[in-house]
Picture 1 (cartoon, rainbow, N blue to C red):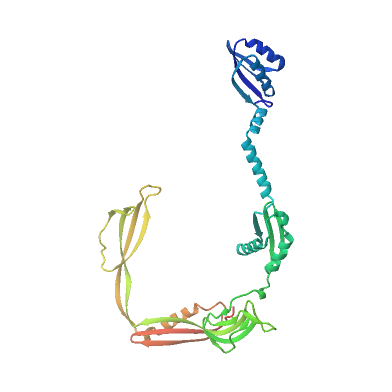
Picture 2 (tube, rainbow, N blue to C red; picture 1 turned 135 degrees about the vertical axis):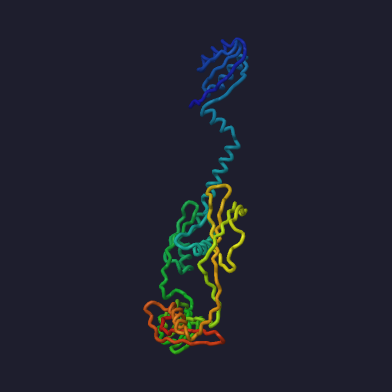
Length: 373
């Protein structure tokens, strides 16, 4: 394609030589080609194509084909495409108009929930989204006034976005709202050191699991209730218990040591092979494991091993008096599980509940623990 552009014409008619000579005197031609006796083809500069058409018309020569090449011709063709020009013009005008408006609001520095609240607030209080009417300083003032968690704020218009950068205020720990301190144990209150909040118990009170120890508020000098995060050290004697049961007559099932392995081969869920139909023991326990015999195969092949352990059930007669110490120690160990590291045991005791052939030992440890945390 030529930079300036050329026009290629195919001409038909007699006595072409005289017309060509007239053309050459006025304009320059290129790539002249005599195709037939009365047909020729050549090129001229695009800027001269109108002169060429006029000369050919005066010479009564027929133009059978004409084509244009180059930047100038393409530009002219574009100028003639009025629809495209109008569309581009309208798009340009629309873009310029809409660029003067804010399309979205972005908030940085807060979590998603808080950012959404500020975006909603700014949207409601913006009289216009036209950039020229947006007062960023007023937005900064309004947001800081209505949101306590905002320490500092900057608002700027960038492109078609309203950017709000926020530094979150650091609220002192004692000013944060919290939940009431709830007792997690049954016990007897022995000492209280209140840091913040309103006490719901006193020294000497017996408390149960679930009771409120400290309310999450204080009463200020004006007699008003103000919410705070409660803090306190509350020590109580609590009771850690472990329970163990004993039956003087019971059955015990134990494995004898004999076993039998049954193997089954499967494709998918279809059984292909089994080495035995029944187990050889009258009383037994079973365990299973599955092994994949093929990998990366269309048809999965599995082997299931069923291990059958022979068991024997015995009737046990065991007097409580013969194993009382062991049963008590078992109950004590269960209570010790709840003991914290370096915690001192103040008292140990146990109770025995007896019925016909049945004894229940409850072992109780008394420890002093901070239950206000």
